[in-house]
Length: 594
Image (cartoon, rainbow, N blue to C red; front, side, top):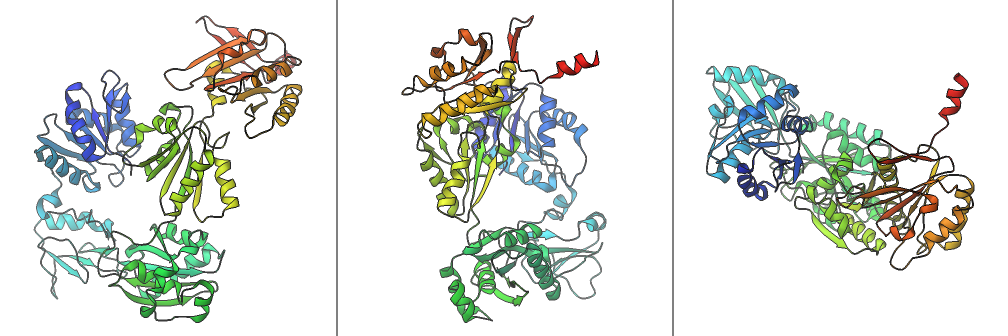
């Protein structure tokens, strides 16, 4: 679900980019001097190189030469390069420069259709045969790409082409194979086949492997069983479209391990859905029916996922703790029935600026079907939104947000629960696990850390957390003040640098003053105090004051306050700015060396 990039160099190309943005579900990248885009860059060649290295699809509304010169130093392997298309500003020409067989040719044609222009496709096989032999249609996999080059060379030199298959194949008007044919053959089969320079083998995604297993079965056992079943039946793993099982196994590690092993999705079905397949089962079991409510899991799941016109070609096969069966669909399975295992990504987005957002956070946000969070946090990640459904909540009601995200994941959806800062620091990660602990669920949870406010504040002001530190929330909405005060006194006596979260709100006005009263017994007047608000946002303000000069009225609910230890220091530099740091003790090493 990674969005393509519409790369714009000048304001004159912006109208076309804006017109294409929605149709392509793309984001617009512009120079910092051009407004109206989604992402701004400073140096075009550096930005293009990074986009290419990141595997982003690039549509450059500019001269082809600019794209070529910027990307040329990054070229390595044509089999992994992302699509790069040069599009003229008037939309008249779309030229796929790189990744022609990885989507660039198709993208150029789509751009030509949208703009009323021409797709300048130059790939020899597509020009000659109307199709890219090494980029078959969705639902097909080329089994022997190592033979593509000699086979294509022979075809371009006049060798005839024929099709040999028992499965449908989108090969235009290619003649069928006849015995004794000596040209290049395209063989389409779900059986194992090696292929050669004169035979290109394509495996259609027509097989579904159904699995059943005891709770906590070992992944190695299921993988070995799956490999054994395929080999004994002579079936190609590349024809697998999915792994399927009953929904109570949605959190079974071994089943997901098999799916990962073969690089296919896992789909799960309710007992009611699987019971509809009972008449087609070859080995129904009363014992299994009593245990899980279905007379056969592996056979029923394979058939349910492969569709009503499928057939069971491998009956239930057993290992010590698992069963496996395989169903064959009449054609490639492009839209799989059943439910995926839902997942909640608990995403820490940092203080606010995209520059401080982890790549893993961006990837999760882009891959999600749904975003759940406080409205302000969702606004902060709007730059990566491309069709996700938003579920906005007001400030507060954290458990409502968590339960809503979990319910969406139970439906098989991929959900990002968006948190500011770090998802595990005064955020939602702990609450997610608390809710699941109280109300068990089979969904997956993935916590993605982010830069927390105390890290951002310390970095902006110097290096205050260079030695031992702690974080204390002054909110007594969930924690009694007596407990907060106990921690305050311990941290003050322990001489920790202390970061205060939730220092004030509209209703809580005196906790910060009370905290400073406790610290006053343990901190010199010149101890540096950092007051940081709106970190990573345009309204950001960071200043350093002496402990004795601290004014609580400078603090609001968007502010973090960090008080140094008795060893922390501050000083002004030539640029007029004051910086604070906490020495770790290297002075002792220097003194000893002298």
